[in-house]
Length: 206
Image (cartoon, rainbow, N blue to C red; front, top):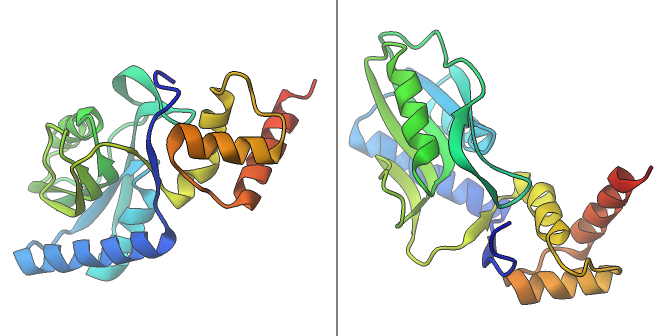
């Protein structure tokens, strides 16, 4: 992790549902009627499913693009780890992810999808960060002041990455909670932090 004091924000399930509903309303209002939704794995899985339900789209596919791993650790370049969907030729596609950040993931996903011959592609994300050079067609919320967004489906992974990068490593639950607040400005549930500490201990056991 490049910044041990990376600012974070916890995103709740209630916020996810609210933003997904806003996204669906904006998409309907624009007149766009996707034939298929393609999720960028893994962050786009949940938003894509919620949009499918709200828009009445049954065809849900995915493409796996990787840029971050182990919390906020960033690889040099985004990579495609799976073949692009083969069943989108001639279809109107809604490409979906949790957020737009560096733009690399969305750019690569677009390149891969365009090779499959869709009729049209539009992008939808829950959060659009102002710094992203790729501006989605639809987004639920615009983030002006950059921070690391911690979605409920990535809470365990992100907390693990944050705690693993702490020097010295916190030895108690209270210390881990305190350091997460000081270093990253977040107050996750103590039960979630305890669970992560237990998992990390199991993984490190001989």
